[in-house]
Length: 452
Image 1 (spheres, rainbow, N blue to C red):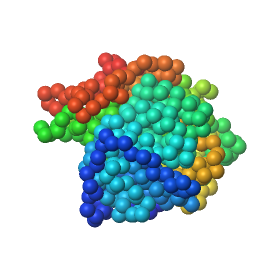
Image 2: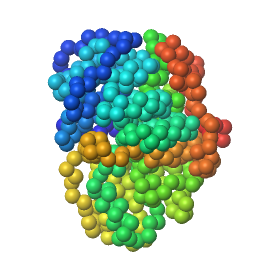
Image 3: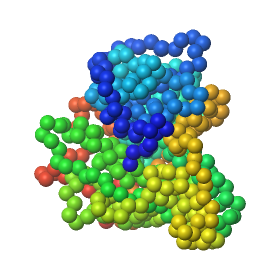
Image 4: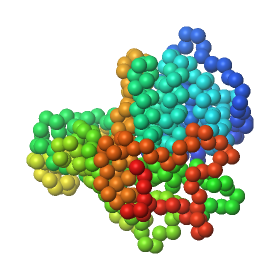
């Protein structure tokens, strides 16, 4: 599920290709002055969450067209992860990595210290690339400070978090703060061309859309005795709803955003089914098979099928069906494999038109566009649209988990929160859930589960 970068490094490769010694220990709790040199046109970056996604985003920022970026601050919950990222990034970019120990911050409030290093109104960017559960408060802080934001998906874990993101997006509009959201497929020229052809009627009237994300994904074993509950859950973030919304919502928001884009609308209802293999030993909260159907205001429908089980058929693509023809909108691992078929048969032998290979990856395209908007002061705020796709994911997840239809209005108005106290979390805090005697965490039981 990793994404390739333009420099042929996956986001996890950053932690495997570095040979330099680990940097000095991070210091926290001290005041750091701004590092702006008067007259400089360099865009300074601060990364909050230094895992593979964050390091990959830094690489895209460094490799962007006409880039004059420099990394000046880093923040993470755990020092070992920050140091691995710092070493790997320095190995690759060296003079553009200017993060001495006094600008390396550890802890739940580290994001504030890293953002405070940046210069409000200067074009500098805070990269929010940690866990979705913390995304709303981090976005709020950056916008209040007047700092541009790149935020990775997903963006919130529950409806309350979604509303916070939307409110921050509206404030950013007023303040002129630019926000890029990590739904990078929106920056694909091939997909844009298919959208143009769809809107022009080349496929006929849109009938329905369908997406697939089927491939193996590992489960979670019992917690080791030497790990605290909080650290175990945070380090295994895709396994817990309060940290990231769960694997399905965290990963499949891309496909859901594509479906909303194709329909040019937001869904009004969702229904679905989900389950877990009978022989599963997974201790996490995740299930491993999912299917959601969304209905849009004009009655058209979108379906997304997911299976995360080893030794089963893999499929990763998005399709659109019109009254005349069908098309593929997206290929494996978000590849811009866009093609139109002669009729409804979506086979290689039936291709009528195929888009050319794109020059850059969609991740790189997004950063090229984002930095260009900052340099030329063009409007750029993707946060509200991203939050709406996030809510479409949340209503689909709730429909599956609860075993009933869920409406957009119900999800939008819901006061449900996985962890109301998440903004006050410290390393000494207890997480909102714990495992049972067998080491397993609470799993949705349709008809009994509540998450709206």
